[in-house]
Image (tube, rainbow over all chains, first blue to last red; front, side):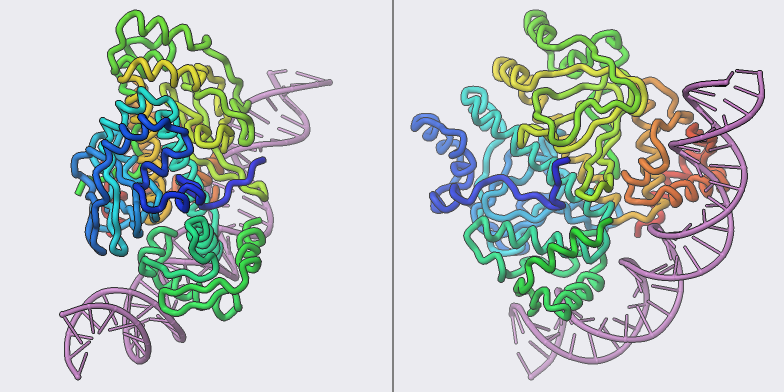
Length: 249
Length: 249
DNA sequence: CGTTAACTTGACGGCCCTCAAGAGAGGTGG
DNA sequence: CCACCTCTCTTGAGGGCCGTCAAGTTAACG
């Protein structure tokens, strides 16, 4: 009945980001829940100031003890699971306003690596204290459940993508998703810079880097996009959408 | 660092299930958090008595408004997302003690179908009321976060499976996961009945039903398992494990 | 300017999908 | 209880998509 887009948009609406882009992400995350000024102060007191993370650095690694969630303030991250033998599966890309580390709540240990793909800044949200505050602020408690639920829905979308789609469809879905998320943050929806390598895209989409490269070239030949290294320009948005709807039947 | 098994075990430990198998699943879900008797009464009062669901019936469907989570009391369910064109992606199989419907919290609408694969019984857990109670019982609040987090970790495991593994590895992981989960519930780890069709297995694993059938036959020829329709007997547990570790390098 | 990482492109092969036919199992009604 | 129907499963043959291997090009950084 309801249509599930292969990759979902996340955590936070554009208005919140625009309104208050100089304050911390969590604060923005919480705006929609209508805190009163005092609750807001309490929340602020929990949040450590924006912490820089250099490109290539890990924010946390699988196996490390869990203490905090992290909200991306500015920048771009990837999350990935490393299997025994060193193979990497990218489980997600995270941009400003999105929350990372929710997988670690279940076992008090991080289960994946979070690595900055460009110089970034995050807010650290000590989970135990957030939980305490959530007890007093029902809207915050509910909001956290919602954010985690959204992550589950998003993962289901990726499962659909990995389980059912061909390479071209996966890349089409990926590009449209990125475009949408950049647009939500006030950036161009038609021209953006990929922060990740072809290999990381491939890992996320269940493809090899050569396949990613080939299909991007094919899309360019078809006049759907323009590729210049990591700069992507969307030429024919509808055409890309059509790949998604026509191929899967 | 930490190794992530492709499909994770879920929500509840065996001792809890065994101790109290005549009471409702949620009660069992909450045992580990150490409620006092009064809190326990409160919890019980929220839970509607076990509700039967006939094989083939839907517990909820994508698009329906969300009111409650459901805990499987007895039986077996699948969750699946239906894409626009009618293609099905099975996102999970659920057995006793497991929680369903957490994806719906984010939008107050169910995003997938939950269908009973055998005659089953569930407990309905009105989410708003559970949330209220969670506010008074910190351990319950935390437990809910943990259960949702575990779902995210599980989904990441499936993404790893779909993105990185070959067909044989996927099926090996699937069989080992089922075996483990049946064992946790006091059933045989070496001999169990598949509740789902080859097509549903294939949908979950990103394979076609013919491939599933072929590989099960191959495993049988190799003396790893015995297949008799939907009855699976694990002959060589180590051999199946080896498929997982040797193929992915 | 040199070195390294990232990307592109081609050729080839293998894995899995597709199509097809038949066998088997389970349920229903006579 | 058996016949019948339908759904499910098995097995084969062939083809296509994508992975693998390889070589060359470009970009990035010191």
